[in-house]
Image 1 (cartoon, one colour):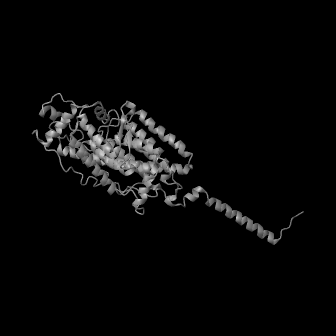
Image 2 (cartoon, rainbow, N blue to C red):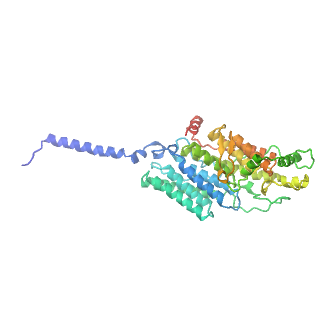
Image 3 (cartoon, rainbow, N blue to C red):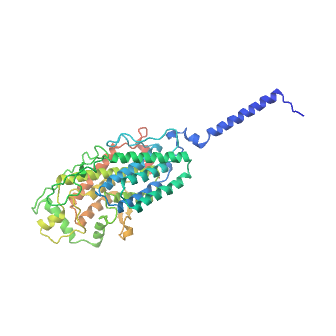
Length: 456
């Protein structure tokens, strides 16, 4: 028996079918992947500051191991490598930030960088992982097979975790962006001047290490403005001269060293350890991030600022060294002051005394750490616990910089002038960089960024 429908029944069924179709369309529109493409911040469901610093901390650990175990023709190259790695991390995640922007167009000779695909979703830890794996492969092609295996292992382990957090398309898009950023930064690094031939420097009394380093490209044009030493020692053998008295202090200190002073001096020898290119300060940042557990955004900013500031500070330091070519204490104390038995606690590095490289890098790091973590931050440095060395305790980052400068005098390898003025030069360069680089977007006031920096 057939069932007959009235016209009103047909109308009712059409209405139900149309409503069902609209419901399916609505459900599609409410799919998270679709919604994310409609949100602000170029289609991201999460911002960079929504993620932990895990990826940054793990890659710092690997990079420190590489620095510690990979001899480079010029050890100072690690200062540039810190800058490039920090920049790669920052640029690989900054499109996901609400408050910060790219540094492209602000760094010397770096006008553009790859951009994301607007309206598509990205996973920022995946992008960071790809960028840091790639940049470390580029920067350390001669590192050991074990270190290369560590790079592969960490990259694969993090990717395995991240693939479970996002769709295949989002994951691959994020990997591609991170790799593109790393390649662009590496290509830019090839023009920094570090591979240019350097003629021998006519030094009368010392073997000159890296005499042309001061000619290399700065990350930030104008970062060294106003940083030139206001005073420098004028050579003299007169016992009442400032030059003689500075050398005499080094000798006098060597006669009364306590076990604690010797321990401090040896701690900052940084050998074995992170002795190359100011990388002890990257080790300090690594420890602080493990303590503070900031978000990915703040970690990336800290790594970029530290790397850029230390790199530029050491370029200027080496420029000053070979401008004045002030001899090390060992020769003056032995030959001029007549103390042939004077011996520093460890061999004197083969470059001029004025200004101290470690002190200059410490001064730059002091400003960066103050800005990121506060001027009264108490910190215990455990960098060499694994060697059985007592940790160094700081009541502030200013205290850190002062202790490091003092350690070079205790070791017998620098005059106090070289350390005090080196720290001042580093301070000025890092402050210039802080003033010149616009990390924050123009539509966000300083108070926004400051609040973000204080929050974890």
